[in-house]
Image (cartoon, rainbow, N blue to C red):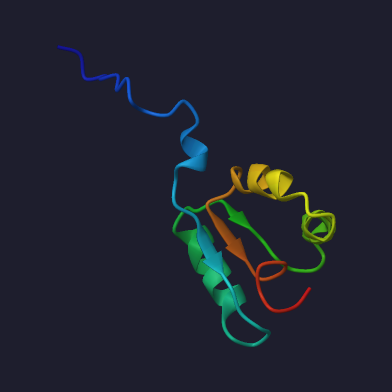
Length: 89
């Protein structure tokens, strides 16, 4: 028997099924340190610093109530840090 087992009940889109980590917090509460720790541990981190353009993209989506697009965006990352998930942009 092969080592590859197919589970017919497994979702074809496991990226939406995986658990996500949201690192929420205000400035000076350790969010950047946790972000670095998640990266060291091998997580694909959506970094929340204001200098990353997707932060503004997500804010705009939230204002426009485009929640399906926000959900689609989250499938590309395992962990999310700081803005827009935290307390300030």
